[in-house]
Length: 103
Ligand SMILES: [Zn+2]
Image (cartoon, rainbow, N blue to C red; front, side, top):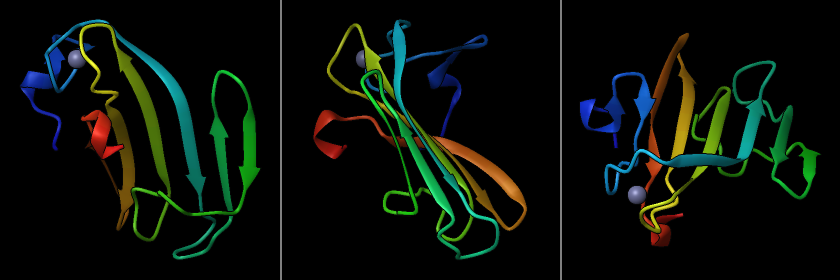
């Protein structure tokens, strides 16, 4: 789902499911590749632990770097995930998922 004006309230990111303004970011996953298609490194940071390995599982970018930021909404159970991806030298962002059953 692309980020639209429905996902923003001025500079404030709002829940893509219910429009609620109270989003709290949690788990952050960073995928870093030193070249196209390589499996260089992944770091997963939660409130309880940090894991570093070379898995590219879940990378929102098919061939390059990616970033996932998980959110909790105070108003619904959507648990939206914001994705930032790199593709052919350009950077994109979108909602990777926003329903609890899609995560
Ligand atoms: Zn919500």
